[in-house]
Length: 622
Image 1: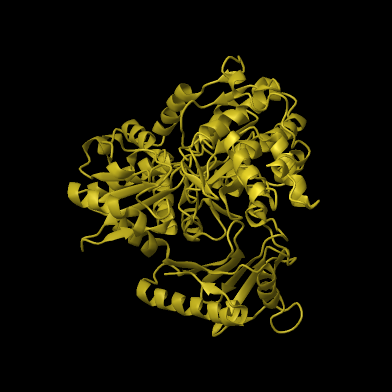
Image 2 (image 1 turned 90 degrees about the horizontal axis):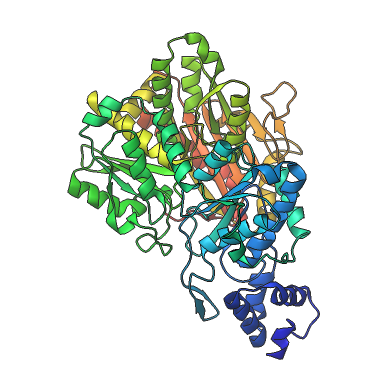
């Protein structure tokens, strides 16, 4: 074991230096023992996985598998990240020691992480411990911390930042990722997720503060500190009081016969959705018993992500059939996303896509707002937002009804920050959504919120029932009035960055240098926007309005037939994604014909633009 003591593998390599440093700094006995064992065995392959590259802090914070090393989520990476974040905040806010920050966590903690045959308990990499170590970092520097005493949904952190006027927020969560993962999500003082350049500033500060500070490992010091506050009770109360303002039909809710089933998919959502229903005077939904309580093993689902559709909802459908419930509501494990399914007259269950539920909630929130605001002049200061890869249905509603619609880059960090800018200008933001089942129905949370979205969806279903309408029927009515918007999204898998670059460069030099394609098969292209290079030929100066990023690939093609298709790389997975939509004008009410045309367009895009054989791309598994 002598070699293990100094991290030596017999070579003076970067890996050697990283492991030696780790052995000096890590005070978690179990992760330390794993590294010592790997060194003693000379297991370079596993050491490379643990120490190959430091987790990169981005606008989404950190997300990775739990385990030892600089490439994984563990006590030491939490300490190092928080030290960097703390130093960055000190430079940005002169009143940090007066205002402080909020920290919370969901129910994720992998109880049997197996690394090279060494199993250890959740106490070693407990998510609550991550939150306590982060709190220790700030309190050791004299900075107040509002640390939730128990698990909370992710949206409660941005809500707390805004409500208590704090400088920042940290949420320990990996959302709907596989069970072995964990994450570290950061909010700024405006209550929205961080955007550039803060990610780069924080990343640099982390690199400058890697050595644990003297009290870094002593989380017992926070328990007696006057700087530690528990906001759980007051924030819980404030959140549900604010939520009540978005209840538009309390009398309908009291009388409704519509029954609901809810699943929190082994996450944190159960108690909070129950409370939300009570705040709206709705009978709380029947909870799926096998998935009601937090369980970091996610034993009943392959992936804890309601976006996967029917596979995650099997137990929900069974319970709904048994209790004669017509609507299923499903949150992801940190309760910031929502999926909704409805039983059809045929007996089949229909799981609404993120775009379809976005259409329903957008229509509902506008209709409810309009009833309370008869003055048409208020429309000029009223906004809805969606991401650029989401359905354009809100744009169609806005054009007809007279309010403003804006699209942002992909991700709620962009919608949250833009919503805050508009609110600060005195505007009303009614709604924002993204196709990945994320909804901001109440702008007191400047992020997606699955708790408020669940109860607002329930009130919508209850109201429609008084008109003898289902959600599916209302969705059809929306499309008939504002025009059908048929969407299709998928992806190809590609692990080679050079291949991805070649594919996109081919699109930029399609028939000669600097010439984008003029058609895709038989489909004529009417406009092209490239947010990698900043090109947009629909603008007078040919420059894109939305922010650009050279580090990611993203091109949007608009077609003469009303089709829109975006191709983009994923920031977290080896995927090239596409999002296609056919937007028909009101009156074109043959959805089957539109679906056929969209399928033809998608096939042409796959064949001519992706060229999967040429680039050896792997299609999405069905």
